[in-house]
Image (cartoon, rainbow, N blue to C red; front, side):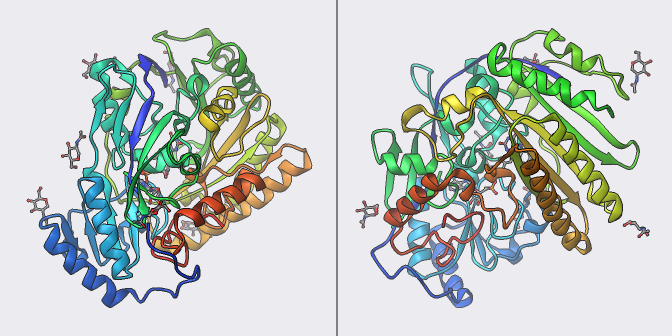
Length: 480
Ligand SMILES: Cc1cc2nc3c(=O)[nH]c(=O)nc-3n(C[C@H](O)[C@H](O)[C@H](O)COP(=O)(O)OP(=O)(O)OC[C@H]3O[C@@H](n4cnc5c(N)ncnc54)[C@H](O)[C@@H]3O)c2cc1C
Ligand SMILES: *[C@@H]1O[C@H](CO)[C@@H](O)[C@H](O)[C@H]1NC(C)=O
Ligand SMILES: *[C@@H]1O[C@H](CO)[C@@H](O)[C@H](O)[C@H]1NC(C)=O
Ligand SMILES: *[C@@H]1O[C@H](CO)[C@@H](O)[C@H](O)[C@H]1NC(C)=O
Ligand SMILES: *[C@@H]1O[C@H](CO)[C@@H](O)[C@H](O)[C@H]1NC(C)=O
Ligand SMILES: *[C@@H]1O[C@H](CO)[C@@H](O)[C@H](O)[C@H]1NC(C)=O
Ligand SMILES: *[C@@H]1O[C@H](CO)[C@@H](O)[C@H](O)[C@H]1NC(C)=O
């Protein structure tokens, strides 16, 4: 698909939400959730009438991943403001009841966004986008979805460095990194947040920016959910041409947005496809000519579109069970090809095509590395000359009997791919949190200095460890 586009991009302010409590010994007993959460839910039910839903009577609740949809929580609460988030957190901590925080709900494990037995704090109602008077920034609710933000900005002729899929939440996307079709030009989303409104572990609401709570500001740029609730061609030439385009993107033409995917389908078997985007309203930009000169199974389709239109689709939720895993490497066409071979052979040996495996590959462009240094820098530790190549293995299936096979395939694939990367000296430790599988050491991949700094800031902001694996907010990836 050729998707051309663009208006201009304003900086933005994410209005996000987090919280904080008195000093206490760092290691806390595991919560006995049952009674604690029952009591917390009762309190919340009286204070948030109509916005507190017990699991058994929450039939309308839906979420992208079937595993998370099947997760049984005690209750789900829908705060509408940072003050309400603060109040909810106070009640949960006072009752020592475990919880999870949901924005767009595109994470993939129980407890990431839907609490296992505890309280799900659903930020979905905190979804306004308010454009500043001078129209250079916007304040975006911590529970907003990509399509809602684009739809709100479009009338102003503004856009945001938002993702490819409209249903993904701005919360998880932006806290973890945020890659987009505009990354060649503007970098990743996390480097465009000027200010975060955060509910700390002690329920205090603070604003973190370069000037206010700068350590917290740094930590929120890549630190995930530890600090607060912040409101396609089957030919080898393909990879060479794609790599050429990635280099052009670094130096000569930042309008380029290219991804390629290697995937299995029952109809076509293993195929290579690409999504070619260009951030100017130009049909068939010549930069893609060489790539498109490769004889193909399918034809180029697409046109000029706006980001708001291209993300407006919202599909059915809760149908598939999903797993992502990821590996980053220095540019190496040889290694890229090896990765595809490893996947194909593992899938075929294991008769695992029903997991619908797909590797999606794109560049972390030079511009991203540059922009990551703005305003004190982010926590990702991405600082190389030129670009890196990011690979996402996505598995998607429909029955729980395949869960174990999926986890095993993901782990085996990464182990072999990593070995191959090291053997050609192209391995890079960065693990993109938004594509990571459980067990991948995301924060170690940021480099020792960033990791240690993140741990230190986490302890300072959360002395009781409420937001840690021994506290109440235990899902997703925890700094350690
Ligand atoms: C179909 C699909 C398309 C995708 N496309 C892209 C893409 O183009 N680019 C890209 O970079 N990534 C992409 N991703 C990955 C995506 O960025 C991550 O899955 C991200 O974590 C999703 O965020 P969410 O808010 O939807 O999910 P959630 O599950 O709601 O949140 C993820 C984690 O972040 C925490 N969190 C969310 N909001 C807040 C908040 N306001 N304050 C504190 N913590 C919060 C949650 O507690 C949770 O642990 C895609 C994923 C999918 C499934
Ligand atoms: C589910 O949504 C429908 C349509 O909006 C509504 O009529 C119904 O009351 C909702 N059910 C519950 C349990 O909230
Ligand atoms: C915010 O979410 C509510 C509830 O899902 C929805 O009705 C409303 O249209 C959303 N607002 C925006 C600005 O998208
Ligand atoms: C691609 O386009 C050509 C020429 O228009 C057409 O003959 C062919 O059937 C198309 N192939 C596919 C797979 O759509
Ligand atoms: C977006 O979609 C609307 C309605 O389908 C259409 O009128 C408009 O021209 C589209 N905008 C762009 C930039 O493609
Ligand atoms: C391969 O998997 C399919 C679907 O899961 C199954 O029907 C088939 O029997 C399997 N074949 C072998 C040789 O295991
Ligand atoms: C809450 O935590 C913050 C950050 O540690 C601290 O600055 C603030 O004083 C605390 N507030 C209260 C009321 O304890």
